[in-house]
Length: 344
Image (cartoon, rainbow, N blue to C red; front, top):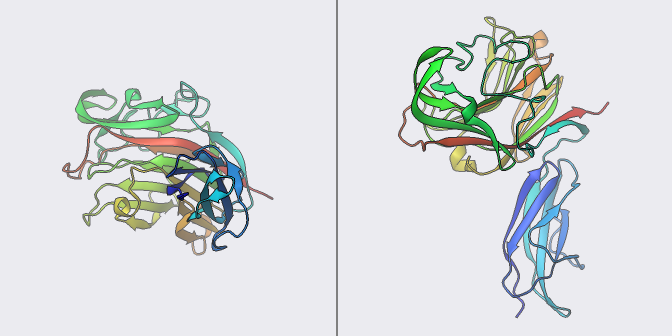
């Protein structure tokens, strides 16, 4: 008997590329697959033959829902039943073109794109507005930022939290934690578009990693919290925040959004694709291509962000959270960052 493959899984590698892997139940080394729009149903025709596992499929259509079927070829006249369907959705919105990317494939960070391990841009001397020092944003963060905790490894950007005693110099003091920080101030910035990151978040009550955008003009506000994870918040559960802080300090206005119990729903330590679309009309937050929040610009008037903003990616430690479920060290890992511009 020619048995169908089992464990058919699809992993999005980026917004238009998917990896499909499975477990063979026979000694076969040939298969065929059918990729089609979701809901088409069990194939009635021959599929595409292949001899490799896993399979990489690229150049997928944007914001499309797919299903894939796979079967074993045990011999020319002996085919298994179809395994599947496994469904998935591509992530890049329609009408966008990629204008910038960093897949962290080099040995050292590209300093034309990023500043690591400090809140101060080394070229201009400019610092994150309102920072308490070069290596600490505010005292609500417990992690003193270090270059040692901000590095590339195995094709990923790694931002690490450590629980250790550390003597800080700017601001001065004794710290119990250190953290990783990356930013693109004065290097990579954009005004509206779509940005996508494939990331693994850490878990635990003390962690506070974030992917966010802040203004190039060095005035605090506006701020987009693309994805900001609180391992524990005031209601006692973990949340993934998706916020807009509009206008400028001190006349700011918060528009918050949350995915409650994020780790339970998604397993935050698994790889996911986090997407954020920002246009004149709306902002849209997606996880693995699924819309989790949509915010209209109606009612914001001149407070809707309309300026160049740069990227901050940081792993941090919540000062006022408990430390009962956190593993040390812990890591925020970024596989890639891509920015897209809307076509005219």
